[in-house]
Image 1 (cartoon, one colour):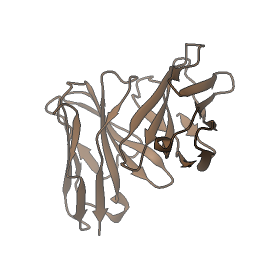
Image 2: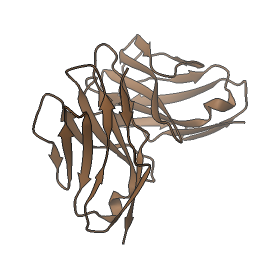
Image 3: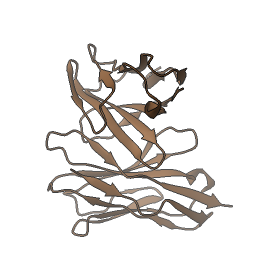
Image 4: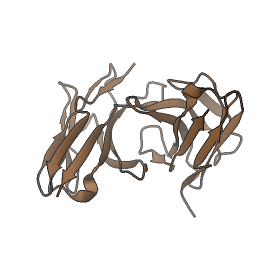
Length: 115
Length: 112
């Protein structure tokens, strides 16, 4: 079974600054995928970024980037130039297939952005 | 409009009643999923479907029933609602199991 751990229940960042959200995962599979989802107060789940485990290059999407450390099973999300609209719950998730089709989520990190 | 929709958005029911939550997607995605979201637990998978007429259990299936007779619909039924099933329920769909899952807006269910 997979597990995903987000050790920071809450974090805050000043507007325009950089913040890093932590995520560790545990899987026995060699081929898997990792995701960060954002859930603003509207409750809508939105994909932020996706990483394939077989790719060594870290994924980036505009102000969002990841630090993927495969050996350490770590998948942190860096948000640069934080904006008020970045305030949300952020969920790390992993998928490893193996007939399961299950996306396993962490418990989330609540990010506040201070003006 | 294209996308994934859920109905109702809010539902209050009583213990023991049957409740069905609806999910509809217009992309013809093969995969559909039902999650529940509770404080302190993140999202947990209830059931998923890889195609019409193919469904399987997720992490927390007890007390729930699903069906998928058409690709675009994936209803979730609580056969006899319990208070522990008070939660926010999300439906999602994806092209493949490992691609981005697109989520519906959620249904907040309260069981009294």
